[in-house]
Image 1 (tube, rainbow, N blue to C red):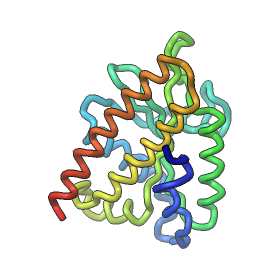
Image 2: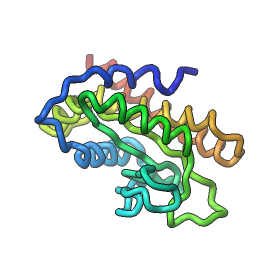
Image 3: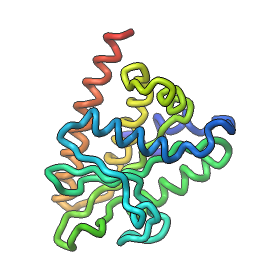
Image 4: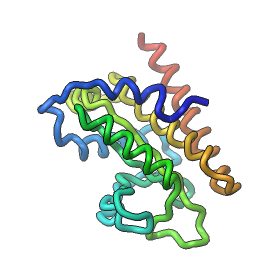
Length: 195
């Protein structure tokens, strides 16, 4: 299995700072939430609460959450979305990967100590793909956007899987990985038919 720092993350590093793309963080979060809602009907996804977004609930400072995905009406995965650009990206990426390594699982305020901790997933969104998507708002026309969302989520979940020995966390991770892998194959097949 590849290292979480390899693969699809490397192409995001060497971008030029583009002033027209600054401040797109909330748009990226909304697009990721919409993508998951549209492609995973069994999954409910919501924006993070203000406390979760600020990293103030149960998982320490700077471990922010942008969205939460649910399966069977229970929290299943915490998503942290980034669409950073420019020189700061490498430093920011390293910081986020270190946070993931140090704290791959968390419990939300709504969870009890008896609930299985949920995995954190870093979701990278390419700013230029985001900008193109915002212009016409059609995921079918932007397969690279969906691929990047799915690949970065899968890489994070696979990394999380290596960080735990808890059978319940492992079961939940395998369920999420299987669900996302299945959808990735469907989208890859559709993308192959349109080219």
